[in-house]
Length: 151
Picture 1 (cartoon, rainbow, N blue to C red):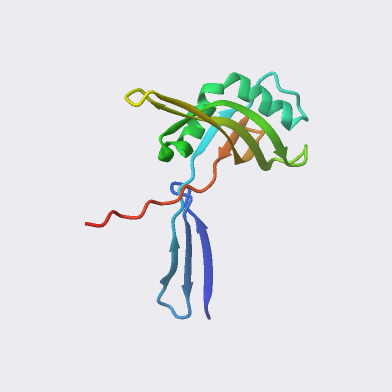
Picture 2: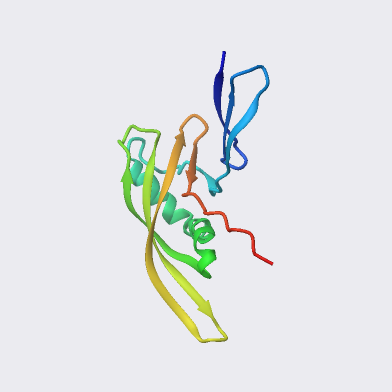
C-alpha cells in the first residue's frame, strides 16, 4: 500500500513530498523556497471589522519596519524600500487570511557615482490574522535562489 504525505517546514517554508510504494520510504521531490515572514502585534486602536483600517494603522505605526521587510526583496538590485503605502486588501472583511498589495519606492543610493534614483514598485504580501493571540503574520513572495558561481 503506497502513501504520500506533504509537510510544510516552518523554518524554510520548504515543501517536502515523501512518496513510497513499499515499507522503505524515499524522498520523491525536494523543493526549498525562501520567503520572509514578519509577525506584528494587532493594532490596539483598529476597528474590529475593517481589515483595511487595520493595515492602514499598522503601516502608519510601523513604517520603518515595513521598509526593512520589503528591502529584503529589493537588496538583490542594490536598492532599499521607502515610502511604503497600502494599495489594496484582497480578502473578504471577516476573513483571517488573504493578501495585500503594497506600493513603495525602490531607492538606489551610490555616493561614489552620485546616484540617488527612485522607481515606483508594488508587491503582493500574504497575511494571516490570529485574533486570539492579537498577531498579524505577513509573508512575502518567494525569493529566487541564486545559482552557485562557476569556477
